[in-house]
Length: 217
Image (cartoon, rainbow, N blue to C red; front, side, top):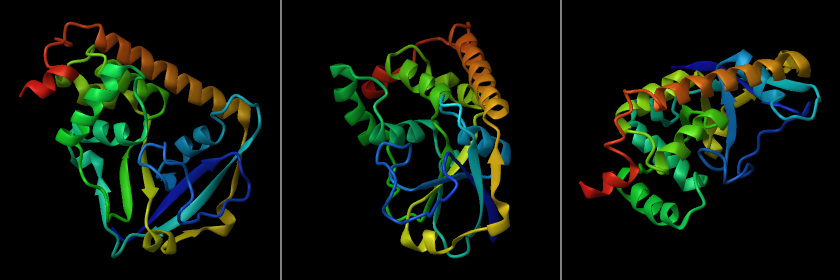
């Protein structure tokens, strides 16, 4: 894989990626999140409704010698289990009980990996997770639902080793216009939700193999 270029969209002009920082309740837990897509990074830089311009920082990651866990190579249920480890898809008692069983059955151990790569669970993807745990989505259409999102793959820098191999491209800083790219973010999110709702409400969604039935096998 060698050296790859990644982008980090943020409201902050000055960013210092630091091992141990970040929030536990992000998709893959604590870490520093980036994407290979410049356009997505621009949208993520101004996705907050505060009308402030944002920034995209450009980085080079030397992947040689790094252990990278790629959720795209896993069953989609493994990805959902990873989300459930860090974020609550529902606040019901039923979900709290079943999510523990779901993680035990379908979760994968990502400990010991330097980088985690996988879908970004922003608003549209979280719509899928919420509908799934409420038994409104058949597992047969989960993969297709994710592809409809088109909302990007992210890299999460996890280990000290990975942080040491991540270097900012000094002349790569880009200022992001709020109006243009916040509109693009909202349009992408709105279109994704519409496509997802249409599929969930279609004949393709048999609502037979659903979240709660997974524990009957």
